[in-house]
Image (cartoon, rainbow, N blue to C red):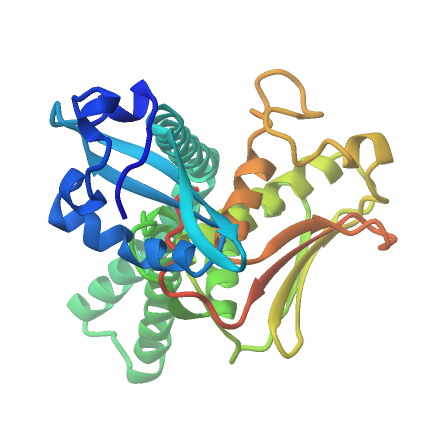
Length: 344
């Protein structure tokens, strides 16, 4: 496999001119390590196959260059007599793609924290109320104890109230931990879907209550889903809050989450009392920065980011036009490729 001819750009990669590399064996032009990497592709083209692959290689100036190489066999009388190598330097494209991924991750994180900020007041209220109950009950128990009037029946009842209230706070904190944790670099983990949904609803329970919106959930408590819980929670939070904004002024106000499954997928449907989305809006709703909300009430990134998260989980997020009420369906496969990393 010797070099027959090459242009100046290809030769420049080796800091030589075309005459200097003509006749040189490929192995002599490349390092042993790089030759070992491309050897399988060389065997394929010598078998008469069209080959294309990406590769990251060190340049003579010490920088790393990303290339897209194409091997085209020249076949005569059924035999490969030589092949043409076309190499495109795609370093700039790769760098732009990396910057895009970083920006998308930053936007997703900003969107997540923004939603959490919207919930902060409600969450604080949800925690402060139980704390006030605990404070009041412990004060009463202390006073009764000092006065020697702490009877067993009333004491156990009050301790039961305190215990239930502590569990309530623990549930809220668990929801915060699920939602706020950055797990994008973790492998997928089998998580209880009912817990993820319950934790998410817990964070927006006070807002829904204040808006007199009825929330219902239908989900088998035993369903396990391979995912990043914090990111699925982020998608659900976005869908719930979008539903909240859409029905806030309606007479009938409800949001329903119901889960179905088939042999391969788990579908989480988020439906509300709205009567659907106009076709012209539905066609644009997943586009970045598209929003029907008033200025200052949304970035238009929520659904776009959510769709990216779901697709990175190997699933899809769709608006269901066939349903009477406004419904979005988040579908996730039951089996995940453990090598996938979610970066949205």
